[in-house]
Length: 279
Image 1 (cartoon, one colour):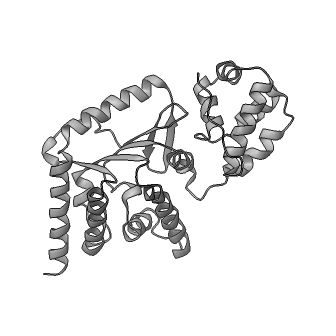
Image 2: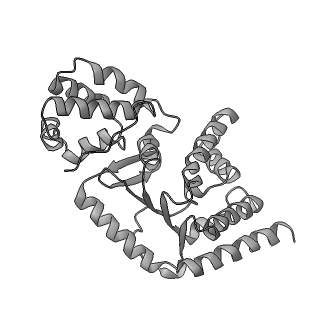
């Protein structure tokens, strides 16, 4: 398995930890597969830790210290990596998302997080936590909008989203908020920054009726699939699982409207929201 490219240890605590893991593994004369076997994980998982696409959990840090003879280096330093501005169930996925080269996402009830406006994100976060202090909501909104800065790069990552029509029809935050949100999506599409397809109601039954999917590809690490539920989420790197859900996504995109027809529908819906807000 190809090793990860050199990382800049000053870029983040996780990059430092990944670089140190690779150094310790190579010093112990172990391949990623061999180290993975001793931790009862795959070699690709070790590669993801080294590349910085997966967060090192305390239980693995302790095992690495034992296998690699690094005293308590990884156990001590993984605490810094564990700190995150994102909810616990989503933190690892958000951090992986920031290093992905390609993201494919099916969203069932929401405009995808990377495409949200602050007002839309605020309405969503408030709905999730109706009794939370305003400061808590604003921290969540800020973190969500910060994630979208990955789209500031003109070419990477590739973001291809299939959005269920239900997400666009649900008036989240009011009609003015929806008008702004849909026009924001239109702007990203027209700047050729994202690919968006709408899965219309008329498509009927489809391959992803059980819930949302997010697939992420990386330059120097195996792909991941992320599953999310209410207050829970998990990343999977099992190749068979990733392949299965990649096929699901491809079938789903075949059921959706073309990008051109999707753009026309989103623009039409934005106009409808605007006219209903200001008759």
